[in-house]
Length: 313
Image (cartoon, rainbow, N blue to C red; front, side, top):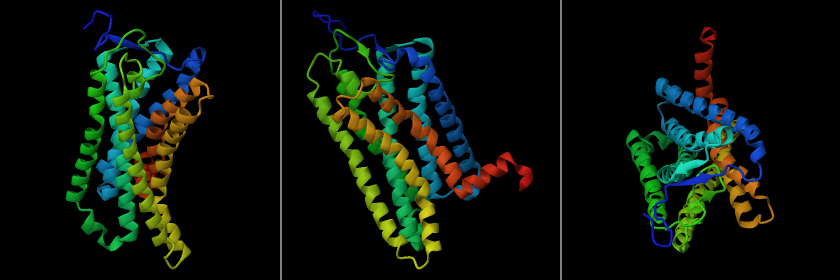
């Protein structure tokens, strides 16, 4: 729909420019991201297969891990293939509908990941601080309810982003200096006030602070309970049960923190650094999570060893 002043509410397409300033290096940058994507897809599919086929893993902790693996598959698939298309084939154009869909998928996936990590922290808190009642508290029914809450909360906070973008008129330049579409990147192209988008974006982002607060509280309580244990062996065993989760949280929140800090305070940092950090934020956690759980979780590690070397068991 074109208005008299050449303004469109739904432009036909946008141009994703990749990583501005590093165009000549796109082909070389693509190979690490391609490797990361392969690891993410294969690793998370293997994790899901192992959890589904190994009856001993049908426990709340591994149900939440399966949710995390599904989320990681969605996040990496929503971003990396288009990124590689830009790097390899210079396919920079993306339709308006595809851009909105990609934006929605990315924010849904990151929102899901944050709340799943929060629920996993609560799971570890109950397992270590109240082990005798663990099976009574986290029944299959409770896990199903938590799964529903995870999805509903994310949908409630992310879905308004679509309508906030659809209400904006776009005019002039439709170039996005990025490898993927996200809410504020699209909003900044509008030729109207985006104050509502900014305020709602901050509100939605602040939900992540609630998740971090719950995670922080859970691990403070876990540490207090662990250091009350009588022996160092018991303490180390208890800590090792949540070590995988701590590593996964760090791979998710640290790139997010660095990306946020450079956007807010790194005004002298080159723009391509911002874009690279944003790409690492969506590409690295989905690849690292299955590797971390595959290496650090004994049940998954043993099942994988039986799969790849059946004669040794």
